[in-house]
Length: 477
Image (cartoon, rainbow, N blue to C red; front, side, top):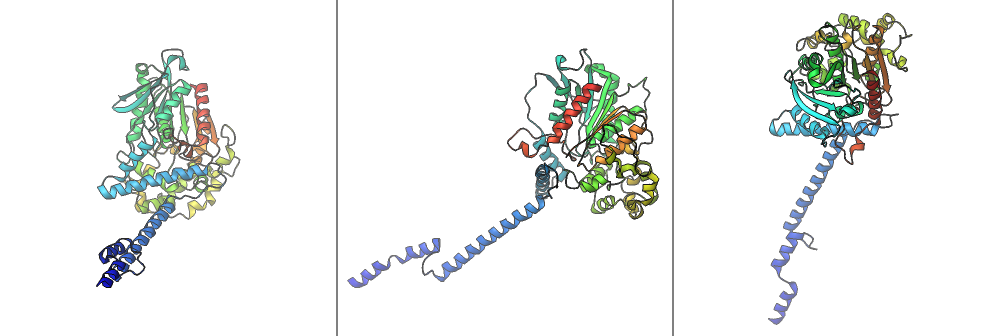
């Protein structure tokens, strides 16, 4: 009996041992039950690791964009592209879970990222009001900081970029605030309504109404109506050029002429997305060719489905006859104009004539035609010929105000600005044009609030461009 109890004591408590085996699963001789449980746990763990690794790999592939060769700040392009793609991915998941509009969620993220939190300024008075029912933000510099010693100051009416679809005067607060502080000019930033909810001509009409009101009633805002300019970047440059064209047609005795138009990386035509700048700068800009086509579709009020995107990318959205005529009249210089733009002002090209280039251009001969796409919405083919929609298509620009045109060396719409500069110059308009080295579309986007990571998303070319703009405004306003 004593020996039996001794052997049981040596074996220990079997219930405690089973519990130990079940919980920790590393008994030297596990039971069948504990082995199955251990194998199941290990399988689950391996599955989770594999799933997580796959998700990280897929996300990395999705966020990755090729690094542009020969561009010093290509890593900043990659960082910005990854940030935008991640924001879109989040917007898509929120849409899937809640049914909220993907675009609305994406817009909210962009506003959160780009709207700065700024302290009140001692040198600026900032007011948000409505003009003609349209919200605007007015930046009025202190008298001692103004370029004018009188009570009436020069004024710039500014239209923000964002593909007619994104951003607001709040997210552009850094840009417009600095523009007013550095130049001593009153800046009026227009909160025009956005596409696709409000397609053309609504954004254009909003900008036109505000500008015309300032020209007629500038004294109410301590603005000299004879020293008013319009300005904008990207698609805001499109709006500025369009407003300048429209106002140039009005009677100067009734509506004072604009002093200046400032076009920064302007987006000016939707006839072809195969200019040299589109072909050569696919990886240098924050906005690629397909995204730019999406923006144009939004502005037209056309749903950018895969068929429309593919057709417009290949140039099949315009009939062959119309395409040949429009290209001959407006875009034949695109193949060479950037090569002749090394000076401050664009000169007449010594390249082959438009008719010679037109007759041999493979883009015109072999593109084909998609009639269904051409007539989508209110008619894509008709719309892109509207000069207030696409200013390059204007037949007469001789009365347009003097222009400052800034383009980016690595911008997909660089040639839009260069072709338009030449068009204005040949019509007798005074044009100052400069191409900023290493600059791409979207590089002038408003900066995020100051932070440790700000340098990851900030382009040095933006500072160079703005300093150039500031100096020209002081000279011309």
